[in-house]
Length: 472
Image (cartoon, rainbow, N blue to C red):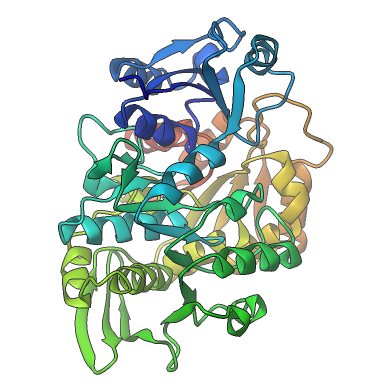
């Protein structure tokens, strides 16, 4: 294959890098890479799985960079002092970002579907992909989370699906999360552009409004949340020449949900699309997941997929990893693993869980020092307002894998803000200490919630907590 390229992924174990590496390999390119976690012996199962897929891994010391024809792929978090990056610069290798590679494959597709927004991107991406697959569309999918419907022995650590290609570099449907955190959202040219919602996370709201507006301006069909208060701020009326379709619970939404009934592990509602209506049973709890389902149905309807088919697909939707994932129950205590890490996600998660009886013992590992600086006050308020009397929050130090980030504001300061807002919070620097405290505190009827992002080992921690509860 003379057309095949040699890609070297620096940080290949990351949630966004790993599936992209698998897509590149699935397209016939040669893939290798390195990761700081690999060097440090963390998540050995994941790296063993990567090697089993035929991907060569190197220490992140520059030794994997051996030829000028290698293309080094980096994320926004990779700093120039990383030995691989320095070696690639010396060798004269081309350097591209993760987003640039994903956008190139995305934009080459006939009908690319981009899913943007502060919360719900991974779930909507998985739902839309499953609906297309169910309808026979064989989509290519780039997701930052493992999709249970596509999970098999060959994809247990990957959010990637290599769909039906029309030629070596192209495909028909390419469904992808589109990230605004580093501004790379402007690289994408969607046929269908979805915005799930707009809330504080990586950037200020004025910055986010501009980024999402530009993204929608470049989309042929714009799918927008009629319930989100920030949607009018994106000024959809100014997106001239584009189709704008709305979804939500609002009466004026183009595709809406009515008669919502919340269940502990599922949701029921009526989907109204024009003069048609459909009874929907979604095997996921929470009003926010109904909103996610509406976004996916609206996007696929714009591609010609009947809502009737979409509803049938959603009835057997299995969800994605670490999104309200029940790890297990022991001695009447249930452990739940969830990705919630920003104010909107935390608020939605707590709202869903506090609708059912049972005390919450919440563990939270912030996904970085930077996010605590950016949104610590809003995040603390989300925890404090979402917790009921008796619920308890335990917080350890943020994720930190090295680098030059400012670490002057940490979890101790964050917990102080939670308490100042009226919530119950405990700071312990070590995650293991938090786990021991939660296990000792737990009693029958409690639910233990493990929250955080950017750290695959959180799922292992959730299983360890469940084991500790079982041993009591």
